[in-house]
Image 1 (tube, protein in one colour):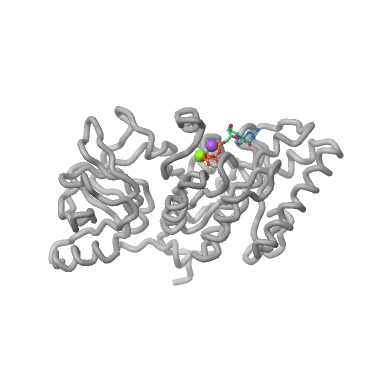
Image 2: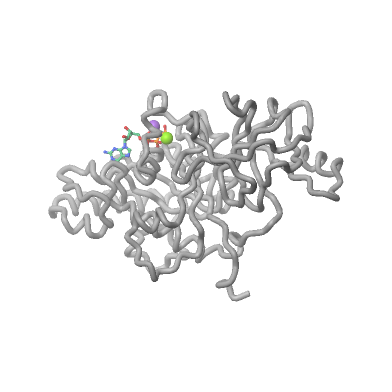
Length: 344
Ligand code: GTP
Ligand code: NA
Ligand code: MG
């Protein structure tokens, strides 16, 4: 195959960074949502998943129709930055293809930024740095949703100097963590050197750049990995009681497809549980999977990866977060599937 006729799935992109760097706010800006406003104390405490269809990304980036994008969308995984949730950062990053490490430009690299970088280094996950809160530079003139180069041209010499100085600081700090990095529009080796994208999650500068980089650069560097395969790979994020659907699990479908009625095996502390998918649900596009409510889910007969999926079935009460969900197809050996579920 020459790579052009492949069916690619949506890349899964994990958002990592120190507490309050602006991870959720960046996603809110992209989704035009206010998930942050519903969080206790403005602190994220759960992994989230949001599907961004390519049409919405085109709209946000004013991309010309003739510019081809090889992926159907992006699945973004929000993670908590608070130090006590390192397990969720590990879970989020380990199911992702790529990451965005959000750094507050006014603070530089912080403790959980460095922890995140270590995590990505160990798991060999490529990443982009979103150098966020540029609007907080003293004297910044807001240019809503502008590409960053355009926004920077509008700034005074003082702001541009301050910006340059802070970028240099962050580049030095990244070097100390073992990464070569450069502003993406000055980066001559975008396959080797980490791209930095300055952003504001409040006024939207740099958001088009970040989205474009994700949908263009990611498929370029990992076409193999993003090639859709029918073998199901699915991870449980959490168990929920839902008023309408009973016990449900929120999952990330990384590859393959799930069908309503599928026989599945999930891990519980008491061992594997075999059950059937009763309802197969997703949030609507651009909506966060973990945000609960009535009528917020779409029913499906089939869902194809990559997607955040809510599954309703009997026996899910004790399903364990972070474990794999296994699908048993006709002719499969159930005992083998159960054993596999336990050994994941
Ligand atoms: P945790 O999930 O708790 O780790 O935090 P987070 O990284 O998701 O940060 P969050 O989105 O909660 O933002 C933290 C605070 O910074 C909020 O008050 C946001 O409104 C603010 N904030 C985030 N991004 C920006 C930005 O680009 N500019 C400005 N001025 N404020 C921002
Ligand atoms: Na926060
Ligand atoms: Mg958050």
